[in-house]
Length: 136
Image (cartoon, rainbow, N blue to C red; front, side, top):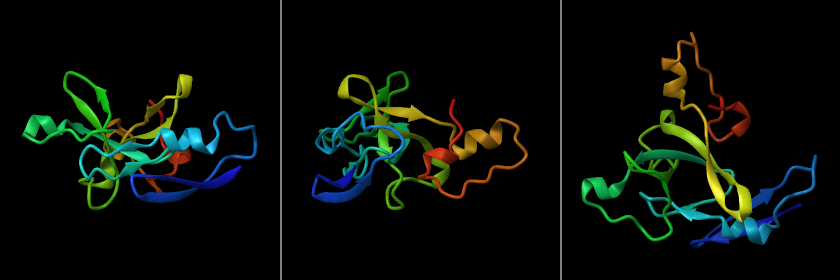
């Protein structure tokens, strides 16, 4: 199954894997789109995400549709766009379908966390490829 999904004035083409039947329809996946807490652009299912300290901690307002990942310290879900994220090394997860039709962050090691874990080298060809990410 494949098709276009739109949210917040942006449209992407989504292709679901053929190996197994899809759990969600395209409309359901479209409804799982959230707003980046920083640039306010859409974060679609499958997009890589950052987890930065909340904008409220630096005097900014959290936009409607933004998602809080966890409290203490408060972290919010942001996108990995070049104009938004500080660097690709900040990729901390992916926005994926979760239980009960709600999307969640699939937390993976950031390239920086992988480096600090003691591995001698970290090679990431595509930060947006969930298959290259090392899960926690």
